[in-house]
Image (cartoon, rainbow, N blue to C red; front, side):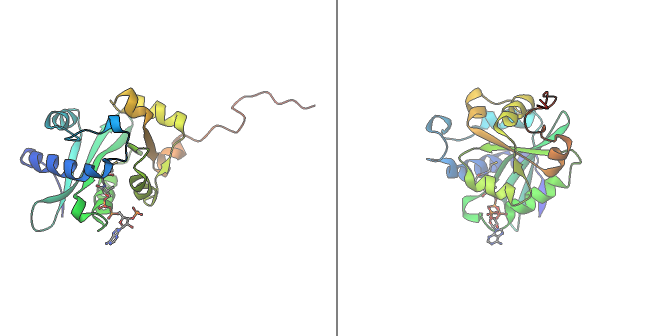
Amino acid sequence: MIRQCNNDDFETIYSIINDAAEAYNGVIPEDCWKVPYMSGDELKKEIDAGVVFWGYEEDGPLIGVMGIQFVQDVTLLRHSYVRTARRNQGIGSKLLSELRSRTNRPVLIGTWADAVWAIRFYENHGFKLVTPQEKDRLLKKYWSISARQIETSVVLAEPKWFALHPAPPRGGAGRAVRTR
Ligand SMILES: CC(C)(COP(=O)(O)OP(=O)(O)OC[C@H]1O[C@@H](n2cnc3c(N)ncnc32)[C@H](O)[C@@H]1OP(=O)(O)O)[C@@H](O)C(=O)NCCC(=O)NCCS
């Protein structure tokens, strides 16, 4: 079952994030890794900034969480984490589908450039990487993250976003064309 999380779930969300984030250990740049990966204060700040967590549970406690944040004209999916022992069982896919159904705005996702499994996961759900220039612009516009995290992250967008932001024609828009 997927449900919106509440204040009582704070410790469980914290625990799931820091358990699942172990996947980054030794993969993302060393200076971006710390223990805990996300402190309680950082998690609280994210929630205060408008990240609403949804969680997946079966008969017991939550097993996976994913946050949704409405920012300006887009929806960000933030902090997708499934307990290490329960990965690759379709839980992340269920959370992703549920949260995508809860917005009409184009969805953007940011993740570490080195988290190749996460990039593949989102690509398998129809997301595509934006260009490096575009990801810098988007991360500065919609996220509140450090310059170092911008440098080491990628952004994936769903087809709806690409339809609204078509790539300029090759050679640059408005460039004069020599006829001879
Ligand atoms: C990324 C993450 C949230 C995905 O959640 P998940 O529950 O493992 O995702 P799913 O099981 O739905 O899909 C993962 C893979 O398992 C496969 N899968 C789905 N259901 C399956 C099942 N019943 N049996 C076996 N494999 C299955 C999918 O094909 C998928 O493969 P893909 O990645 O090549 O697309 C999770 O792996 C995670 O927490 N990773 C560590 C933290 C992280 O990278 N978070 C992303 C931050 S943006």
